[in-house]
Image (cartoon, rainbow, N blue to C red):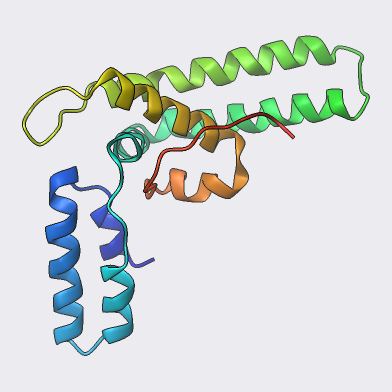
Amino acid sequence: MSSEADDLYGLALDEFIPARDALAKRLRADGRRDEADDIAALRKPTVAAWAANQAVRTQPKAARELWAAGDALRKAHAAIVGGKRRGAGDRLREATARQRAALRPLVEAASCLLDHRGHSLTRQAIERAGDTLHAASLDPTLRDDAAAGRLTTEHRYAGLT
């Protein structure tokens, strides 16, 4: 994804579509039709995905800790599933606590965002943003878009496999 396209996901939510359409129009005028088509196809994030994107973009250190904590939790879980029992329960509890602690500052950042009217986000949107960040910390297929702040929909993680 181009940096111009990537920048769209950092905008205020109500600016996404007008900016996306203007960028696609400019690219078409420059004769870059394929790029313009790719840009025009970009989906506007849901409120929860947008909040998760903004939290990750504004709190990069906290996001890196969340990704590391998610990796540690997956590793601790894999050890138990793989039959490595000695101390595995303690490591799983510690990893779970670390992952929960790492999620808090990002959810807090999301809870401080305002919508285009200057109103706080709903409790449900903040919860869905937290669920999405939790899922991104544990799902490697989701992590790239989350780490880049380019999520378009909210996600839930059903469990470690």
